[in-house]
Amino acid sequence: MKNTTPSHSESDLALRAAWLSYVGGYTQAQIADRLRVSRMKVHRLIAAAHEMGAVQVFIKGSPEALLTLEDELKQRMNLEMCSVVPAMPVEEGANPFANLGMAAAYYLKSRLDTRSVEVLGLGWGRSLSEMVNCLPQMDCSGLKMVPVLGSVVRKMALNPYDVIHRLVDKTGGEGYLLPVPLFADTAEHKRVLMEQRSVQDVINIATSADLTMVGLGAVPSQGHSLLMELGEIDAEDARRLHEAGAEAELLGQFLDAHGNRVDAEINARTLGLGLEQLHDHHIIAVAGGEEKVRATLSVLRSGLLKGLITDEVVARAVLDLLDEETD
Image 1 (tube, rainbow, N blue to C red):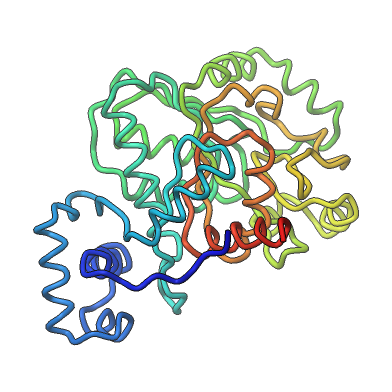
Image 2: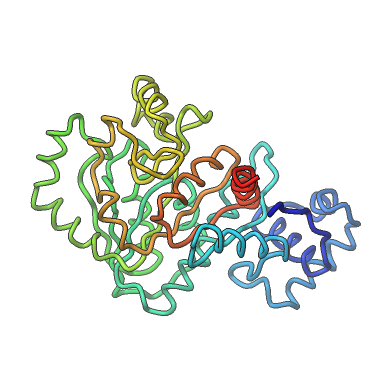
């Protein structure tokens, strides 16, 4: 089923104006240019969003077009939840992860408010880091937060432990560290590290997570790789992954276009929960941006996800790829 570009209702415009103002940080003049309306109209639209009860700590609700994308992705990819946010214009100095972080924080807060999450598993990446930035102060003193992959990476602002450390400050919960790198030097080194008592203690907690929030990554052949940017993989790793047909990275594991783990040596060196251990987890992935389209489809096809938080660019492109395959 092909997607059509819908006309924007007043409520749709009000929500878009609210996203651009409160998440994107755009001025009313800039929003007027984006939406092709007058500045006075923008003022009225934002006021309408307030009257709708949409603007609270978060922006509550989505434009109608995005709800359609959410429903179709849920149905076609067998998801329990899906949240699609407006794609922010790419401009110098803008934060491309702001809308994803806001939506992920809203979802996480709603789950924590129900007190149904006792153990929260966490991956890594820019979207999850932004999620923590957007989360308000909460009282979740009984919550345990644990990484599901190695916590030692080169840039502290993106590693799982930094995310957890800041979540401890936001929630008052208890945080854990998995004191190993994301990748071991060899498969034998991995075996030795994983057998350490301190590592096994944390892994045992991680396997019992009620909710696991993760990012997902593109591979270098798709134009950008955060792992390569951070020095976690090198050009030789990238070449081998390309030859193996890798399309996505999930928690340090590389998958092909069908969502299967590729036959690459690096997959034997990843430290943390294995994909087979994650099949029973309630995993929500947070990812957006044009470079993540094929990676997102790959991870969706793995069957590991219960939910996806993404932007409208990725959502439309994934559905278009699925349509092309059925034509």
